[in-house]
Image (cartoon, rainbow, N blue to C red; front, side):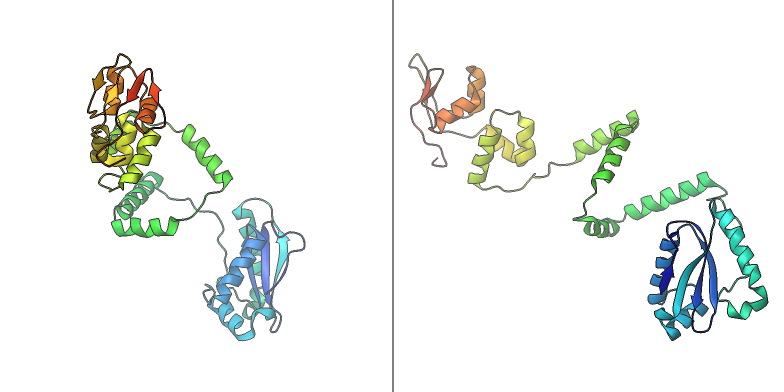
Length: 285
């Protein structure tokens, strides 16, 4: 389909589609000529156009036989466009057999979104809640959205909207309860001993909440109460051991856990006069 916009492709107004073989025309109005032309062409190529007369002619003569062109640019709202559209349709009434339009009257005005907007919004809200309560629908939407990335402009708009959002106390309470009931993401997940040791080095000295998040409740308890077959010598020469919890030992003697862990792992000779007597634990490390 050849398209002639005359520099008004992004404007609104009245257009016509002409069959250059039999000279039949279709008259319509659009908010944007380029968008409407693409919509017509896509529907016709997929054999899904609502105008069956125009679709049959397109299937018979092919895309090259049709021409989309601007008739008149009409600024303003939809009512202004449909009024001018009706004028050009009336001009074709005497020669209606050469027109693809199946209606002699266009939509004269924009109807309201709903006569009962509050009730309509409530119905739509209930329909969406019912749809999202279906696990199969959630699974399908998760697969469809996986891998999609939002643009920087979209992220900016979402950030501004989130900052200006006012959350009621009831909603905050619901969020708190939902977070408490939700289990940690790695709860019950089995980690290798080497992976646990690497995570221990990264998180040693931090509060237990971070470990609960990384290991789950069981893994966190194992990490805190890990039994070391080691003995530490104090600056006064007293021997302490075996150490069952290095963190608790550090808290009791006002020592830095990171530095003491370095002493235990052999990376450091001493910390505040405390040194290692032996370096073996139940894992052989």
